[in-house]
Length: 290
Image (cartoon, rainbow, N blue to C red; front, side, top):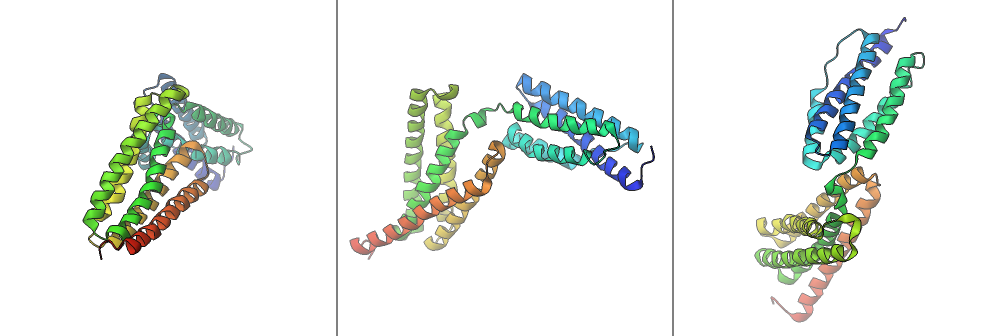
């Protein structure tokens, strides 16, 4: 078959993508504990290698994998779980399927396009990860901490007007609230017996998510002496936590990032603004610190 230079270059790009994903899926399979998930990953790795060989028969060239991409997704899987890494890779599978459909005159490549679409379905069926099973508990702890604690710290800022006192009061309030939330989640999970979730694990996910948020939000008042500047940094930290968590959640759950981010940010900052006003009014009418 006579293939022009531009088509050869496109085939080589696809070839690099296939060998990269073959190595990547094999490496992810090596760290996956679930036997079924591991077998599917190994199967896909083998198919990607087969695609590479078909493409090589057209290009006539050996192509090296993209090591940066392999390490990037490998580290993502290690840090944030296999599910998160796989969901990000799904977009790559969709793009690969679309790109192969351009080669209408090459039946072998149309077969690869079909395989890429099948990979998407297989990857979606892979999802079987503990951290996602307890995502509801994490959401509960994080949402409650952000909404309640941004409001509490905003109120303390004007009512107390001392960064060390705000940090101390906030820490005591936050730890007590985290223990309370964890206890409530334990009792709720135990009574509802939801999806086989273990009550102790559900309580730990909720409590730890709450405590991490508390530490991040109290830190500015420990490190910055001006309470108003510390409050501004704390609100920036809250936005960052909301953005990072919602990005993770929406990728893993296939939901809208913009909708979830906006909803949580508006709720947290509305409560913070209201608490700030309440703190000011309490200080004004009680005469404390005068």
